Image 1 (spheres, helix red, strand yellow):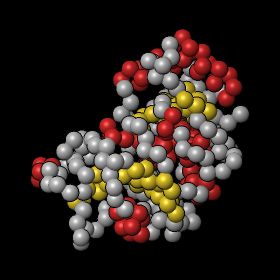
Image 2: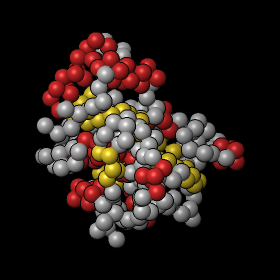
Image 3: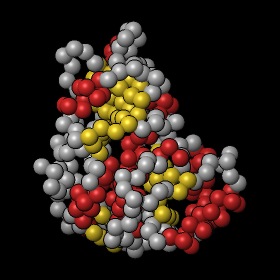
Image 4: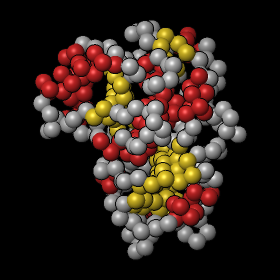
Length: 295
């Protein structure tokens, strides 16, 4: 069985891109399930899959996050990876789907878990907002805050991989996008606008556009429900596979799991300084080159 990918919200599970992509397992909130049942479910997952990679956003409730760590502690299992992802909800959902795709490839669980940090660099996640007055996830100047009170104002905000905010106007250039071929996923809130499809998508040279329901946590993450959330991503599993394969693999000095990059996905232990010195310049150290075969 492939490594199990788990999530903390059902709307982080996007439809699969093919018949082979497995779904993700939902880890219930403390309000929806007792700790005893949650421990039992996790134990069963480990019995069936061997390893579990749980992906959750930074906006998760503290109680839910404590629950995840409590389950791993009670089971005393080093086969559970807890990956806290600093992306907007739609970006997290895209990353989860890519990890689901990788879980059935010939990568070890450790490589799949540590690949999350690598793949996050290739997800351009943002939103079109009618106001940034309550936005606290991306740096916003006082001047921009003041402009957000002007009726009819709209802002294009990029949260990752590099934060950027621009006020939309007739001559406004969209925020810089990917320099490689991507698909664009759009989730519409209560803002009526075609700017993302008609302006942003052509500027980013996206190859295809899909729509999906807005994740339930998106209004809270962005500070408003009047929004259109978007995320561009690498759609081709062969390119993702090549990208992950191209990064040097190491063994974690603490738990022994295989990893890529500079940090273990299971125990979060960083590579030692001597190991880091052996790394060539790459995506997880000094830059983000274009994925193989996309230039």
